[in-house]
Image (tube, rainbow, N blue to C red; front, side, top):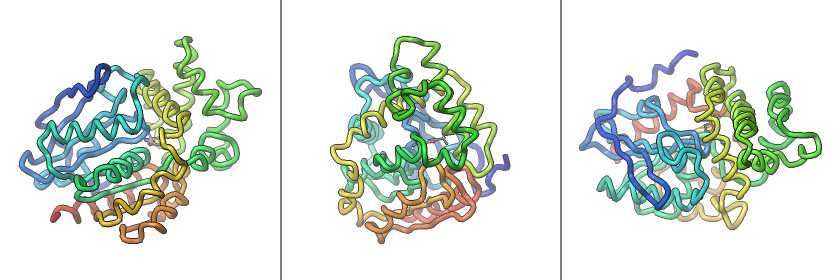
Length: 319
Ligand SMILES: CNCC(=O)c1nnc(C(C)(C)C)o1
C-alpha cells in the first residue's frame, strides 16, 4: 500500500515511560518531536488498538511535542488485554494523570474512531485543558452505530464475504446478538476459544477499514496478543455501552466544547463508523471545521484522510 506523501518523515521518540495509574494498570507513553514544542496527545482507536511509530508522523516534529499513549490493556500498557477497572471514565482520568505527570497545561488532542470518542469525552470533561481537537472517523458508541457494524444488516451488506468469516465462531442460536455472544467467549476460560474469537472479531474490523483491503492491516488481526487486546477491550466497552449513562451522551454534552477549535475529517465510504455519526455531530457543532473525504473509508491511512489530518495539525501549530 502506498504511504501518504503528506506524512512527516519517520522519527524516533526521545523519551518513553510507564506510568502507574491504578493498583492494576500501568500505562506506556512516549514523546517525540520538539521537547520544548507545543504538546499534542494522540489517542488510539479500538479501544484496545494501541499506538505505533506511524502515529508520530501526523505532526511537524519541529513544532510539536508529540505524545503517544497506550490506553489501559492496549499496546505496551500492562496487564495486556486486562478488562478489570477498564472504563471510559478511567481512561479520561488517566489522560489527566499523564498531562500532570508531563507538566503540560494544555494540549491539542487528536483521535480517530474510538480515539475520537475518547477525545470528545475527555474534552467535555476537561475543556480548559484542550487547545484544539482533530477528529477522524467519528464514533460516539451509540447503539445504532454498534448495531450497524457488529450485528447483521448493516456493514454485512457491503462486505458479505468478510461477514461470513466473522459469524463462523458463533452458533446459529446466538447470532441475534453478536456482541453478547463474542463477549461470552472473549471473557471465557477457554483460551483456544478466546484466541479464535479475537482473531475473527479483529479480522472483521481490519478487513473493512479501507476502500482497498490492506493486507498489512489484516495481518495484524492474526497476531494473538494484538487481536486479544483489540477484541477483548472493544467488546468489553461495547457490551457495557461505553459506560455512558445515556445513548447520546456525546451529543448531549457538545455545548461544553463548541468553543474549542476543532476539525472533523470523515471518510465518505467509512463502513466501520459510517458518515451519519460525523454528520450528526456536525449539525450540533457547526463551529467545528468539517470535511467529507470523497475517496476514503474508515482508516486514517487513506491517502486523502492522512493529508487532511496533517493539514489540520499544521493549521493548529499557531495555537
Ligand atoms: C469502533 N472501533 C474502530 C476503531 O476504533 C479502530 N481502531 N483501529 C481500527 C482498525 C485497526 C480496524 C483500523 O479500528
